[in-house]
Image (tube, rainbow, N blue to C red; front, side, top):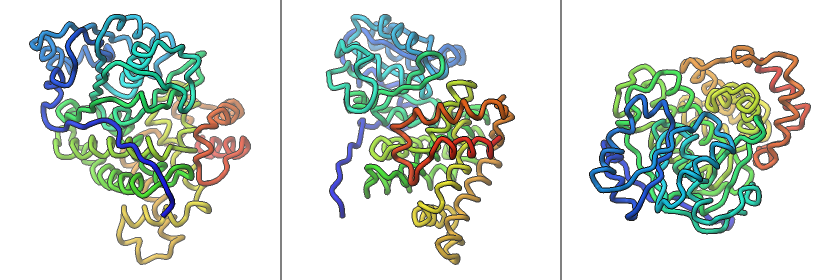
Amino acid sequence: MSAFTFSYGPRLVSGSGAAAGIAELLPPGPCLFVTDASLRALGLADAVLAALDRAGREVRIFDAVEADPSRDTLLAAVEAGRGCASVVGFGGGSPMDVAKLAAYLLGSGDDLEAIWGVGKALGPRLPLVLVPTTAGTGSEATPISVITVGGSLKLAVNSAPLAADWAVLDAELTLGLPRGVTAATGLDAIVHAIEAYTSVRLKNPVSDALAREALRLLAGNLLRACDSPGDKSAREAMLLGAHLAGVAFANAPVAGVHALAYPLGGHFHVPHGVSNALMLTHVLGHNLHAATPLYAELGTLLDPALAALGRQGQAQGFVERIGALCRAAGVPARLSEVGVTAADLDLLAAEAMKQERLLVNNPCEISEADARRLYAAAL
């Protein structure tokens, strides 16, 4: 066995109603509460905010986080948090990403422009609790924050100090999520599990075990959660699966699917989970020759009947079953459905090449010509 290192990430609290107890996880003093306006309007944050109030916490609410949060939004959150003793991120990946980086910038005083990339943020941060309200991004489990700069380019800070002190999984917060959100976020988590399992950098036995269990939970419960939005057991399985996938890819980083998905979000504002789903089977097909043994293992995990086939058949069966799952979940199937045209393919391919930190993790090379071909196939 090769040598490896592994970080388990935040301490975890899981259970129905667990989010109402977050005051016990925070130090005394004012708290910056990062969320978005739609969650506030739905009342999802009400119980948590009421619990913080009962505990005597002064809460400064920052609810201006948008999808694919911008640098300006992040810096506004930092300003709102001046003088706070802790940070809570409540919502999907966008509020949690802003919360992580705001907590770091407030605690360290570092210049944002100096810490883009991997391992450059090395200072202290404020105490941080993350509460996901979707089962998808796994952001509560990772030391990664992705921010959009210049209107379309996604940059990331990936450093250990961004990992939260606590992650709180409360399936009550995900009950009744619309089918589209459930499907897109669930498929995002499935991509995390697949790419962690097949990453050529830092893949290890612990990340493999977590990625396999994540994929089992997610693939086995996604359609139940889509079809029966109030199915609590399915929601709990999805939330745990998304978290385990997050821990896995925090250690064995994601790759080509994400690299090709990011330009779709940056330029066409396609939700991240939908972007991943649109490119998923195309990138899996591109990788098939290099990742056959690993895809075969995942294929028999999803469908034991594939064990009767050889490795090539098991791997091809895996790609086919993932494609069928995407179709059954009901996410958009073609780039043309989200506003992409043939005239956009050169731009997308060039933009994908900027995601070097992701492309190096892919089982095989994706050149600019490959990326254009894959976008064309998805059109």
